[in-house]
Amino acid sequence: MIYSLDKINEMAEGDEDFINSVITVFLEEVPQDIKDLEIAIESGDYENVYKLAHKIKPNVDLLGMEQSRAVALDIETLGKNSANKEEIEKKFPLLKKDIHQVVSELKKDFNF
Image (cartoon, rainbow, N blue to C red; front, top):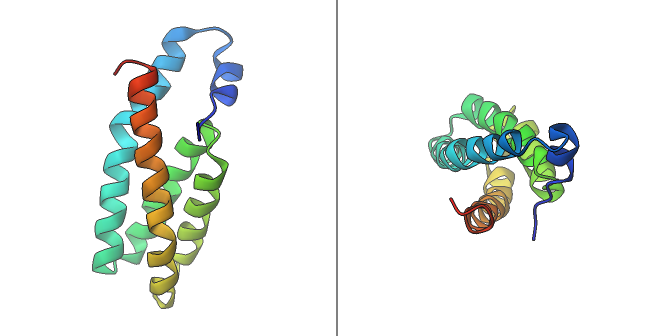
C-alpha cells in the first residue's frame, strides 16, 4: 500500500463522512489533474505544469504519499522553467503510476 490514512484519520477524529469525502474528492479530481498535467507537459504549457503539480501536491500529501508529493514538488519547481522539459518528462511517469495505483487501491478499499 503506497497510501496512508494517518493524516486524514487525525484530522477526521473518527468522522467517517469526512474521510469518505476526502477520498471521493481525491478520486474525482486527481486523475483528471494527472491527465491535464500530461497534456500540459506534452504541449509545453509550463504555467499549467506548475499550477497542476501545485494542485496535486496537497492531495497526495493528505494520503501520506510521500514519494508522490516529492515528485509533484519537483515537477512544480521544474515547471517554472521551460528548459527543464526533459527532467519533467522523466519524473512525470513516476507520479502518474503512483496516482493510478492509489486510485485503484482506494476504489477497491472503499468500494467506489
